[in-house]
Amino acid sequence: MNEYIVDLFEFARTGRVAEGDVQLAALPRMVTEVPAEVSASGRADGVFHWRAEGAEKQVLRADGKPKVAQFLTLSVQGPMWLECQRCLTPYQEPLDSETTFEVVRDEAAAEGRPLDEDELEALVGSKHFDLRELIEEELLLALPIVPKHEVCPSVHESLATGEDGLAEPVPEPEEEDKPSPFAALAALKRSPDKGGK
Ligand SMILES: [Zn+2]
Image (cartoon, rainbow, N blue to C red; front, side):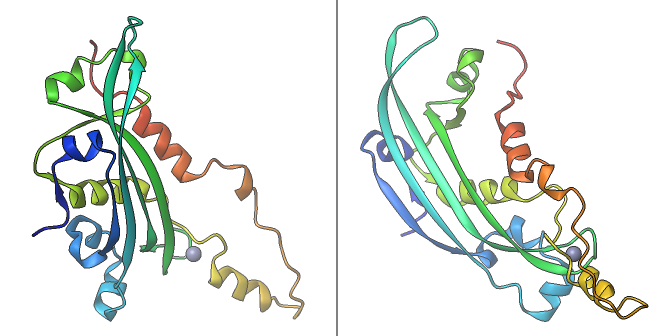
């Protein structure tokens, strides 16, 4: 009945693919990220496209022994309303993320994984796994740490109405060299957060 509930073990083992669109309104934690101004105006409609793909592969463990493991790749995309931290006006940030998880049986299996295999995040599976929760988590992780317009509209306006009436375009300062917030988040996500063994 709920298309988001899957047997994740079976999903991964048989290489199933599912995709669809989820409304922003159906993601309560994302809804709280929408600027109040946008929510109040009723413009906060949004749709995110998601795609989940299971896979089963033979992998080499740290000890050199082959083992069959299951994986889930989840991608999510869509525009999200955020408030620009530079000019404090709402804008839409395109979110786009793709993560591959290794599906594991339980928490113990997740924690028992050798540290050098931690490039892939462990995902504890279940026979009634809620894909929507994972979709929402991935979207939350894809949010920029400091949301801002690439070029703020108000900045342009003030440049265009300079005192001498000349609208000299001023290059945006140094934005290109900064690592993208997505890259920074991806790096954060990858760093193992479980302590020791
Ligand atoms: Zn702005």
